[in-house]
Amino acid sequence: MYEIVEGFLTAIHLIVTFDPDVYEVAFRSIYITLSATLIASIISIPIALFLAFRTFPGKRTIINLVHTLYALPTVLIGLVVFLMLSRQGPFGFLGLLFTPGAMIIGQTILVIPIIIGLTYSALVAMDPVIKDTIISLGANYFQFMASILKEIRFVVYATVAMAFGRAISEVGAAIMIGGNIRGYTRVLTTSIALETSMGNIEFSMALGIILLFIALVVNFVMTSIRREAD
Amino acid sequence: MVNKKILLAALLVVAAVFMCGCTSDGGTDTPTATTVAPTETSPVASPEFLKIATTTSLDNTGLLADLKDRFEKDHDVTLQIIAAGTGKALEYGERGDVDVLMVHDRAREDLFMDNGYGINRRVFAYNYFMIVGPESDPAGIAGMAPEEAFVTLIEQAQTNPDVVVVSRGDSSGTHAKEQAIWASAGYNYTSDISGSGDWYVEGGQGMGATLLMANELQAYTVSDSGTFLAYKGDIDLVPVVDEGDILLNIYGAMMINPEKYPYVNSEMAKEWINFLVTPEIQQVIAEFGVEEYGQPLFFPSLGNYEILGVTQEEAESPIP
Image (cartoon, rainbow over all chains, first blue to last red; front, side, top):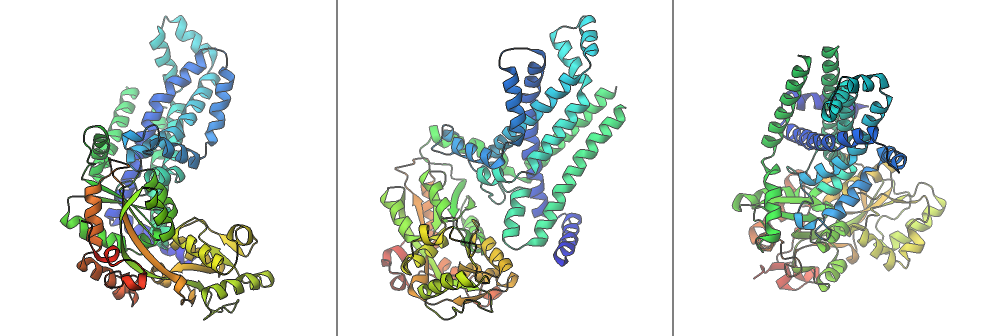
């Protein structure tokens, strides 16, 4: 109990005094995860649109696969990306292993299924009348897609926020791909794992609280965008 | 109207975070460029980074952070330290993913070098392994020789549920040493020890985490003396067995063979290893932790090659 209270107080102290070590790690976490979420969104949303409005053989299987991959174990991503990016792997020549870039790749893979799946579900659940109305107004292909996305934009925001949360809180892949190098690939989660193993419980608690705080801010931004729109 | 606002807000957030990301670590943009370059354009890897895979004990104790600062002061390089345990470090080395290894398992190091992956090994520090455990010593092994202690541990554990052993279980150097003691005590590790019951906990974590786990379980474990001293303040385990030739723990550094992997930063790797065996740094190693823990965590290799059973060249001479 003492450790938890002490950890909480230390956390507050580190945060209000702008401890450079804590903030550096926190900003790196945000930077890596935001990059990954952006890249994953750019890849996933067109795929979700394609899946929702086209019919082709094997579509059902792909949807099932995407849903299964929601539960993609992060350590498996870590292992596969490690093998791909290692000097002995097919992309070893890039020299990306143990860099923030490699971590962005890992997190991107992690959240792509989530963004595809949830966006797809929203598109399918949409009232068909809206679809017909947009078409009847004479929209071309891109106008149609843009209008559809506008209709489900709040689901997309929520999906992206959820993907962000999943990516920033994962530790398995980050430690395998990034190597937890201080000042370079050390992020909030890997830092917590390390500091705890080194017995620095208070520092770990502080980092954990910051992680939670970031999630809170993301959620707050999403809610306020929505409220403003309403 | 609303849309524009949303777009503006989103853009601002993205811009702000990207700026934060860039300022918080200037390395984010450069590494991709610098690490890509050496593969095609030049045989010499980028001088800005030196990737070191190391046993967790050197990192958990803080020694490596201290040496890193000293080295970076005089050299235009950023050391990237990946603390992974000897087994994983050797794996990284074999794949050519790092430039230098700092490990402590002579047998596997020899194999690594025989297979042509590592060259120019230098021994730079040593200390001793110890069996640590609860002060009450439920198995009654205090003062025994390591092998005798292990035999007693496994025998006591069959009847006394208070006798628990936590193993690193991660093919680290410490784990290798533990297996060597079991072998020396007459057991087959794979069939007699590993997975043989609740008394034997295979933690699968670094040295520090394993000590904390053993402390929670009030169990016995094998630790290097350096990490134990560094963690002593956080745990109430005590050294129970700390004498025996088999407990010698030798730390070696070697570079990855550039003939095998031409892109490794062998120039800086050589500088780093030679830096470790300089008399000044040997002195730093000898004094590291004395102020904080009351005794040194590591002993220097300089002048001690006979204790270590290595050639004088390996313990003291810089790589030519």
